[in-house]
Image 1 (cartoon, rainbow, N blue to C red):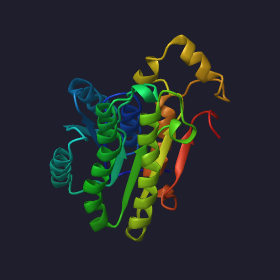
Image 2 (cartoon, rainbow, N blue to C red):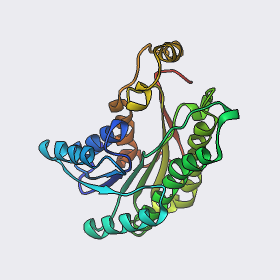
Image 3 (cartoon, rainbow, N blue to C red):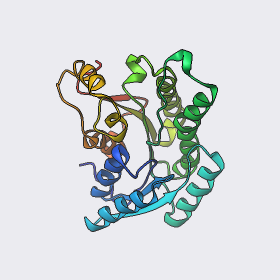
Image 4 (cartoon, rainbow, N blue to C red):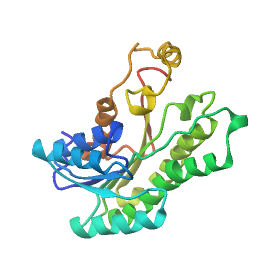
Length: 248
């Protein structure tokens, strides 16, 4: 089950954390994986090398999802090299936290450019080939805060919530072409982003997690693999919450 032989998958922000885990999971099931990065070229190459060492196929592609023109150029080049892009995992994202009264316009612009406009630009660019092939999988990476909110993350939560509406609209728009669009909403996952939390913040968060432990990037990658597979062909416009019971 969940084999992806012959499929080409692009994972944005694929050089570390959840993105890396998704790259490795997709490659393990036969997909040719494109590991996107902005600044972490060395890390991205390491991911590709790890995949190759395990018998998979991967390459790197450096572009900033916040730059729509760069997105179009890069994805067109990927499609020319491989003939198509079957799976998009729009994972690239940034977090700028702060109480509402301290949120600056430039913070709003940066968050929107990467987290929302970037995801939509990637979906727009990859959907062209998916439409011709009459098959495609689009997976947006949201967050538990999109559903439950969180003090100090008004702007970030807003961008992650926007992905829910985008995915559901895409799901309706492309359903006739056998293209699905879904969202994964991770909870408290062991990543560089959560590592920056203070001990007090971590303790507060853990009290809300029913399973009483943090999640792993591999937990998110498992959901990603399912949504990218043929077996998930009847799942579209949905939000998959992988949060250990932090929000139900």
